[in-house]
Image 1 (spheres, rainbow, N blue to C red):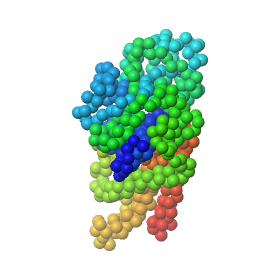
Image 2: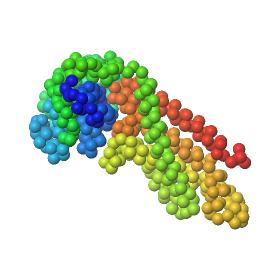
Image 3: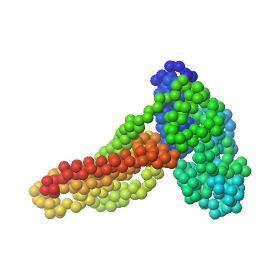
Image 4: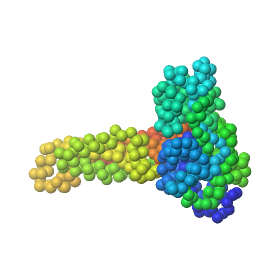
Length: 477
């Protein structure tokens, strides 16, 4: 143990990007902190670099693993690869800092199948100049990074037009001969497994990416001291072996991290393994339902009164419905990203996005249901001396209720599916299984999240069928 019981009651939030090595390194940090008395909250699957960085800057996480090359070019926008001291000097104004590196560099690289490399005589990145027909698939982040494809293509005069792929799926595309070149991390376990060739960076374009702990300066000094124990403890081959253990030996991040800490004698005992997935599945299902029903309730409180107002004032109805419908055209992940600068990561932006998606079916069905009531009935109600409020309460709302409930039902099913994307911004839920499974190209993990989400959607459909039957006026049954 590095720190005694003085650390008790201290809370540290550890973040992680959604790729294999990020999970492992974050879990190593988390278990090391827990072994030294800290309480750790885990916020994994935090999208790309800028999502993690902004979460750290806002204090939504306290520490996550990062790389010196990424810090130099992406976060600090430097013209060259900076040393640890130079990075810390520039980060000081933001009250952020990095520790000394873990001991390995995970640089970017381009990889190709060994057979294709031998057939085409491609061993260096510059050799791709002679093969403009080469099919290239690259991770979305690499396509847009300063140290990514755009500047790499300029440096090497490469004319190919790459397609974007999720990093974990690119290896499958290589194996299935759908692409011939992809970007990789030099410590990826798939490189050896799939007999891939790492192309020589003959112009030295890629900088060193030394892995390290990236943290807030106000992180408890005791926690900083604990994390310093990771300095120069991981070799490139050890990191590649840990990645491969998760990908191909079917070990989870917790097992691999615990084994590493025990082997390095950084903890007395490896973390206890919980072999049952049921408790974790129940927790994630509970979070998923909470996100869905909070957003649904908020949408009902806004959409149904708005539909009534539009019914009473039909002139602006078309424009309001167009505006609400426009929200449905924004891709879910983009809408979530839009909220991050405003609300940060976590459940708040997830609920906000789901709320907006739920508005259209509720507003439209409320308005359409009220508009579709037989005019004769409305005239009879007026002739009986009912005012606007009485007509709405006693006649129009009861008759429109089947339409309104149908709108709520549609919104609920949409929300259950869309809520899986909330995992990308640290909101949790069943999407965590899906996002992690995509990163690992692990179908069983994807299904662990997808099947319960589908079951929830079916259960909600059945629940609303019952509610609609109960709420339907007797004379309509």
